[in-house]
Picture 1: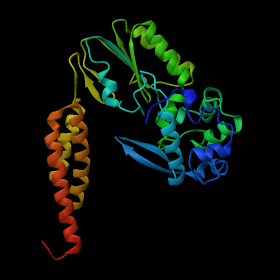
Picture 2 (picture 1 turned 30 degrees about the vertical axis):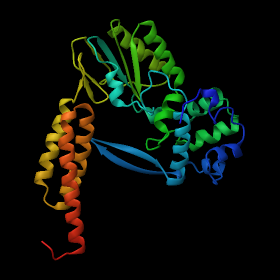
Picture 3 (picture 1 turned 180 degrees about the vertical axis):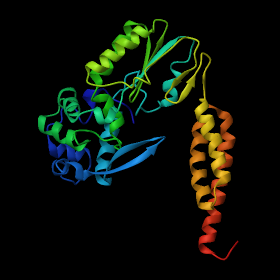
Length: 316
């Protein structure tokens, strides 16, 4: 399916709740659903490293509506600098845009989804998409929880861009004025080029603060031309991209966990994780492709063995 300009979107100049329901192909009363607020979401925590992250996941029927709205937003012609939630672009192609011997700065917006307010979502649909006030309010309520974007919503990645399009366009104009290459991958924004400097990093942080956000001070970084740059989990050099050392270590540790697992069930869990790591690594370094295939085959064999044991408990 082809992309289209924003004014060709089915969501553009939408003034009827009934028409919105038809576009989303739903029999649900979306205004009623939107007013359910927190009842539309399940809440749980996941562990990432040493931290616990709260996940706000829409219930299935609401998640399906989020997916449909996300698909419509993703079909709007994206700017050249947007690499998240965009067809044929990824975290890898985002990093590849910065290959070369030049300086680079990157910033990471802290707690981005929880910081994108319902008002910003409303303003996008009301003033950029030119929807009626009531339709804009329904969509904004439907797509947010506790007044902000949900961390577990399929619509949040693309909506986090459009709800902040003015900020990102201001950053892009700054990049153009410095003859710099800019890319955006959700909350990760990078600038590279001959005229990129620590002063530019300060100007970028100033724009982000003016729009109501805080950047991760630990993750704000200036890289000199000769340094290896870490961008969206990819090590970028002047000649190309490679797998970062921490991902090499994660793969090495993954094999250790597989071999030391005490039960086949635990071993299968570790194999599942390792297969994912290896296939993802193979996108950056093709030498991991064979390892990924072998791990995938080992996973399939172990699954068959566990299934056989389930049906034939007496078998060895």
